[in-house]
Length: 258
Ligand code: NAP
Image (cartoon, rainbow, N blue to C red):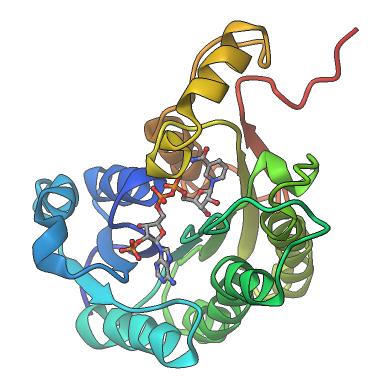
């Protein structure tokens, strides 16, 4: 077993997940990074994580499949022997934005499979490992972090399946937080707003204009590092009497204003 704490971060091949993995590596975590990309094609992104010299493994795995999720857990246990942190970050927007009256079953299945089913069943698989660990490893404080979105409570009728997946991640967080509290495992939801990544690059002009026009009290794009810092805080061990908490990382978007 490695001496480091071990964190699994899904969707770590770019964007928010890459920043989260790099932040946790900078704090001394061994990292299991997962994504569907070929490792050769994302070497620069992986280097952002490995530059801190901590133990590292990349698993090419689709989190919407049972086999993919099992490969991630097997890698963490096989290579490092323990799991302290799971960050369910991998997520997709619909391939095509479509009015809710036209949304297809195929798109709904795809988005729910990658965003929601992965979060639910990877949490389930990792929680079982963590339940054993709290009995076997002294002072371990296992933590599960789910990356949702302001779309958990904000309607976008052009991407209903995304909003539904994120709302369901909020309930998934509460359910696991409730079930796992007595096991000594804390569960948190991080709720990002508009963050500058590939996912939002297709709507950059729209969001530039909205932010300029006052969409958020803090008038700037969020950066992947803003989300990574929030993950670092909930994994710090300083919030152990809080579970099921939501941390908004949204420039104040959630504040109702008159
Ligand atoms: P991104 O740049 O598009 O990155 C998405 C990540 O998810 C990539 O690393 C991708 O890796 C991985 N991924 C996608 N499908 C996967 C699958 N089936 N199995 C495993 N990994 C998969 O998006 P992002 O902006 O960083 O978003 C990260 C998370 O934050 C998502 O859950 C998103 O919904 C949420 N979020 C983003 C924003 C925003 O404004 N950007 C706001 C709120 C919430 P591969 O390409 O290698 O598969």
